[in-house]
Image (cartoon, rainbow, N blue to C red):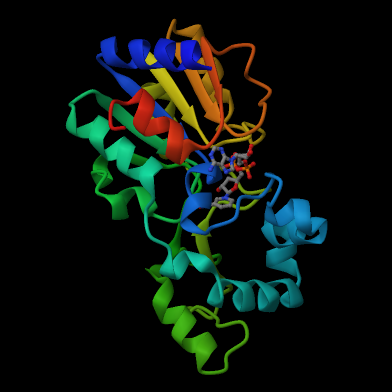
Length: 251
Ligand code: NAD
C-alpha cells in the first residue's frame, strides 16, 4: 500500500493538469450515504432504486410523494464538507486542477471552497428544482417550505407541471453541454483522479476510457473494487478522507 501511495503521490506531484472525477464516496464521511457501498441506500433497501427512476417519478404520484418526504429529511441539508473535499480544494489552489467532475448532487465541493466554474455537475444539483414541463429552475428551499406547509407533491408555481430536483435520474439523459465539458477535461489531462465512485454509472464512468485513451494516467481511490481497476495506473483501496490528503500532499 505504501508503495502505491508513493506512486500515486509522485504521479500527481508531477502532473500539470489533473482532472478529478468524484462520486458518492467523497461525501459518505459527511453523513450522506452512497447508493452501492456496504451501507448504501440501495444495498440496504433495493426497493429504493425505484425512487431514482425518472419514469417512475413522472408517472407515479406515490413515488413523488415518497421522494418529497425523503428529500425533506435528507442529510444533505445539514452536511458539511469533509477532508476529501478539502484536499481537492488544496489541489486547485496549487494551480494544477483542470476540472472537478462530480457525479454528486450535494454541492459539497463548492461548500468546501472549490471554484464553481471548475466544478462540472454531471448529475445536476439537489439544491434546485426543475419543472418537468416548462423547465423553470427554482431554489429547492421554496419547494421544501411548501412540503413543510402540507403540500405532498408541490406542482410548478409557473405552469402546474411536475417539480423534481434538478438532478439526473436513471432514464434521464445528461445535459449535452455538461457532458462535453467533462469529456474535454478527461481528454485534456495528465492524470485522471477518480475518488469514491463505483464507476458503475454511464456515461460518467466512460470518462475513464476517454482519459486513458488520450494517454492520461488514471488513479483510482475507492473503498471497493471498480470495473476500471485494470485500466488504472494506480489503485488505492481505502477511505477517501484518509488517502486524498496523503497523495495530494495535505497530510
Ligand atoms: P456509488 O454509490 O455507486 O459508489 C460509491 C462508491 O464509493 C462505492 O464503491 C463505495 O465503496 C465507495 N465509498 C464509499 N465511501 C467511501 C469513502 N469514504 N472513501 C472511499 N470510497 C468510498 O456512487 P457513484 O459511483 O457516485 O454513482 C451513483 C450515483 O449516485 C451518482 O449518479 C450520484 O449522482 C448519486 N449519489 C450522489 C450522492 C451525493 O451527492 N453525495 C449520494 C448518493 C448517490
